[in-house]
Structure formats: C-alpha cells, structure tokens
Length: 162
Image (cartoon, rainbow, N blue to C red):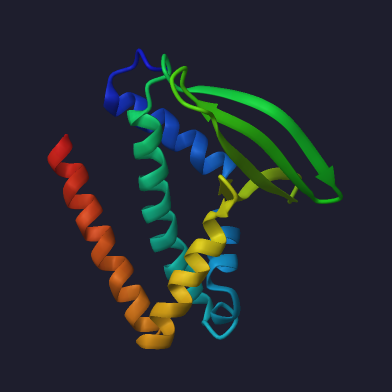
C-alpha cells in the first residue's frame, strides 16, 4: 500500500517478503559446492547474513517503487511436481516491460521463492559466480567478512535515512 508512511510500508513489505521467500534455499544454491563443508552454525550464520543483505536490497526497491508508474502483469505460471515459475512483466508506460520470473519450490506444505530471474539473469547464478570468485581468490571466511562489511554499510545507510 503506497499510502502508508515509508517506515510502515517497509515493515509491511518486509513481512510479505519473509513469508514468501526461502532465503535458506537461495543461500544454499548460491554457495553451491561450498555449502556442504560448512558446519550447521556456519550455515545458519551465512543464511542470516545473506537474508539480511538480500531482503534489505529487495525491500528497498519495493519501498522506492512508484505503483502509479510501475505496473506488474502476470503473464503465466508453469508447474512441474514441486517446482513452479511465475512469469511477470514489470514496466511503466514509457518503456518496454522487463520480464521477471519468480521460481518457487514446494516444501513443508508451502510455495516459496528460491530464485528471481530478471531479463534472463538468475539472481542465484549471479551470486554463485560472485561467491565462487571471492572464495577462490580469498576463502569462505573472506566472503563472510566482505558480506558483513556490506551489511554494516547497508545498516548505516538505512539508519541515516530514518
């Protein structure tokens, strides 16, 4: 609801995002082969940082979007066993719409988004490439250190906007 003041709007959007997205699945798929060697506490730590960063980025985009100019059109959905894809087009009257696919997985009796594909570019694949590069050049600990630094910058930026 765009009529809500920004802090209340942010809270509402955040609630919806946390209900509908499986950040655990996104984090695991983004780390790929680097996920298994992690201890359960390391996995939990990584999911928490990943969730915080991704959710902040997505929620900020949603809060700042203007519903009068941004239109979402649901094109189609496909389902195969425990996986589904919702195809949408997002745009405004001036520009050609962008294609956005939400990929969902059915787990524990609910459908959750595990990837977003914007104009053919997968969020999970994009993160996987970045994470692999950082881990190869540095280490898993180096990746976490960079993510924590980004998290601190995001939190400082959010606090300044309030």
